[in-house]
Length: 187
Image (cartoon, helix red, strand yellow):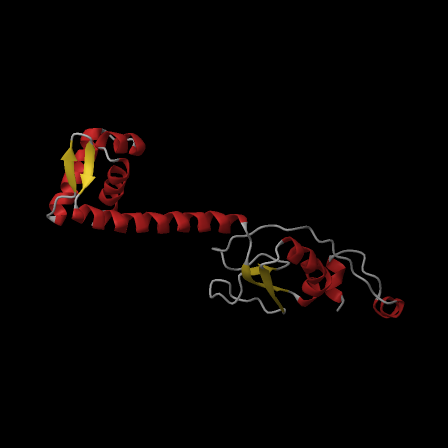
């Protein structure tokens, strides 16, 4: 069965008139009438009794209206749930990042995130190995370098300033680097 025809049938049965259903659906009365006739032909039955006061459902029409009413309610419920799920954050999110970033920066901020989104669960995977996101090893990866997989969605989260430190003993033994190129001579 064609859902468009069922949707039009439901509107006609609900309105009790081809004209009123056409107004609701933004279709002409003749377009609505053609769709109802085509549906009746495909089902090989009459769905409406034409009456001076409008349209009245036949027994077969009542059966179909019950079915389309149920379908419409379920679709309305699904639409509402989808709309709600876009506003609400919930479920499990598998996040992978380096041990240093995850333990020093990310983990201390998780309580604030949980307070804002109590139905969210973060599965935090701290390791240096880069997990394969297309193979669903994780949902999100926070890394310090560009990923090698070109088809991933990327967002720059922040700029991290790196500093190098050395003990006085190391510098006395190996010298103080003066440029980035000098770092090649250091471990």
